[in-house]
Length: 398
Image 1 (spheres, rainbow, N blue to C red):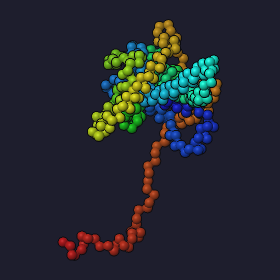
Image 2: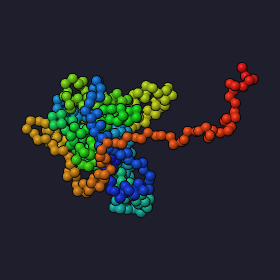
Image 3: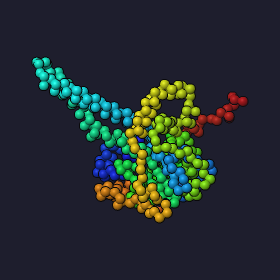
Image 4: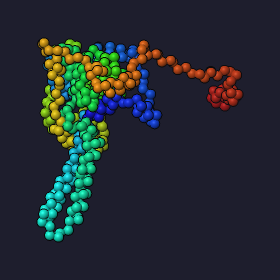
């Protein structure tokens, strides 16, 4: 579930030497240059109305006159597969260790009351199961646990909190995904503000909010996927307009969204698998629908893993200063800066700052492509073309 956020954070703190070596071995597409005019255009677009029908598809966890809190994160519908694999490895290791303990107890009893029974086979079984159990567990703890924590033994959801009193936005993420961040509302850019900023078709992709480096104070942009995956651009517009009006104008006149509980109900694990697919199901052929029916057990397995993942995580909790932000007499949380990170991370962010910096000025206009071929002159016209008589002038034709 946190895989995309983890990869994004790694791209911000990736050592320059490793990145250059990787790019040298693998041909990477050149990053598109971003100009200051592009950022200004997106910021201006985010401040204007996107549509006349604001609506939030959720999940919304808190909604009142001051705070709007929603789920963020990409691939929430894929959550569950890592949980199943992780639990299978843990169960395999524990079964081997339990079998080893049983054999050790048997050998201990045999040692106390030895009557000449053979015990070589038991010794071999103890060695084998102990090696498999502890070996698998050691490899999992060293290499696999970091991936398990994308779905288990961590915060149940990634959250975004909009506070209209302080005009701030707070991101709740684990430290390996960038940690908790405080951002200014006035620096937000959005994929739902205009169709040219959205993904092609806007199918299966949640709303995207972006803060450029000039507003983050950490030398890198912040990018989050908000809410459910969408079926079309109209849903992106409605979701963004709901958020924009809440922050700029207040909750008056907005349709009250359904409030989702943090308790891990079973339906919260199965319904995300179908987010963003409603339009696809309606327009698909009969053969496709039959195929989806045949693979429905796979959805059931992933949904079960999703539910196990939710139950093995805990409810995210904000720091006290963010929980009380905007209340009378309470301090306003400071914006996140580079100094909030450890020295090693600060150095990495400074090294990679040039990757995200916008080029000054306005994006140059594209030059019109003109043909370099010279037009044929009368002299250059082939003799063959000149000697071919026009069919309309033939005497044998009417």
